[in-house]
Image (cartoon, rainbow over all chains, first blue to last red; front, side, top):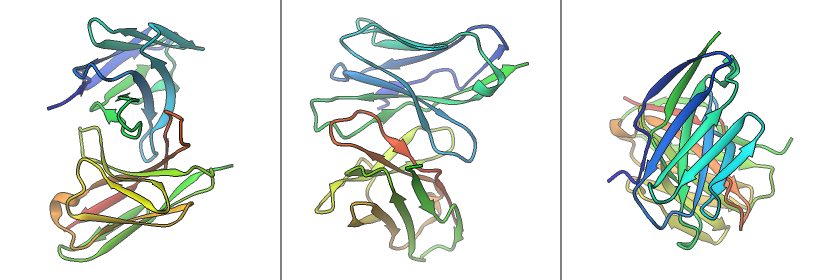
Length: 114
Length: 112
């Protein structure tokens, strides 16, 4: 059973507009969430994270929002740039359970159109 | 730059062959991981190691084995490769107490 779900396999956005990538989770024990970005032929690279004690974390053009009651998080990219075109993975962690395993979603492929 | 490297980057092999994928890191991290990614799917954890003497199975360890030769080296072996092990394999590292994992560039393995 998939514990981290990214229901949109792909998303296209015009350059300069906002990109919103969504992620849902089912395990209420998850308390830390990360977003990774992956270009073709490269490994995933860490983008931004959020702890369950917060509902928002911002880093430059990237903001992650967490709604614990809905078990939902989203990544906002404003403004979107062509270099943001990549696959974005949402990952979740239960820090209390040995703090080793990240559970990943299937990814959303973002295409930013110039 | 401190980095995570994987060799080979691409490998084609035949069913029944033994294959070893290697991972090295210069980040000084104590924890290392092996993940598998299938097309259209997220990353699944195969094995992880918290230090040289600590090896643990992940969610999909059947058909795989690992060796932590040193703090900086973590190898993944397929004892007898089968076609459904065709996938992208990623090594990752982290520092104990940190939530962030750093990934290598991946190895694309094809089993014919």
